[in-house]
Amino acid sequence: MRQRFGPVLGLAAAAALLVASAARGGASVQPAAEARFILALYEGAEFDGAGNHVAEYVAWAKSLREKGTRVEGEEIGGPGMSISSAGGSVRVEAEAAGGERLAGYFIVAARDMDEAIRIARTCPHVRHRGRVVVRSLAP
Image: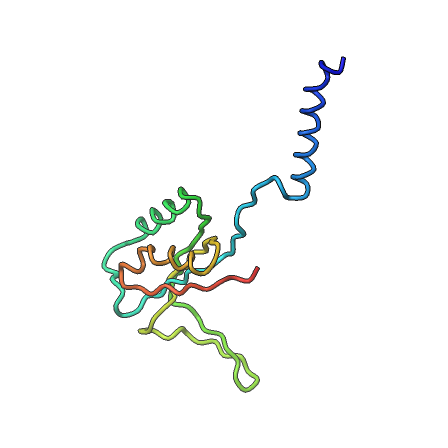
């Protein structure tokens, strides 16, 4: 009798240990914690806006997704309005023209700032002489 139930009991014990270990977090491999970063895309006088680069940015984001990077983004229309307060009153003014403007953004998931910078360096915006500012987002 012991011979016949020995392998079954052994498998049941191994399965119970595996379940208990997984419940404690020991058996499962957890992915590295990811943070979220914003890649703010600025256009200044040097920006090469001669063409419509939207398809290039879409292809870049798609290639990141295919590699497993979570990414989303939007182009920002312009010009915008500036709302500020001074001396107790709120002012609403047209955004200053002619300077650098925020043109869009991407939100990416990355392990840390270094990885976010590596991702930002591949953004088409850099090739078109735009500026990309990388900032971490609060959890």
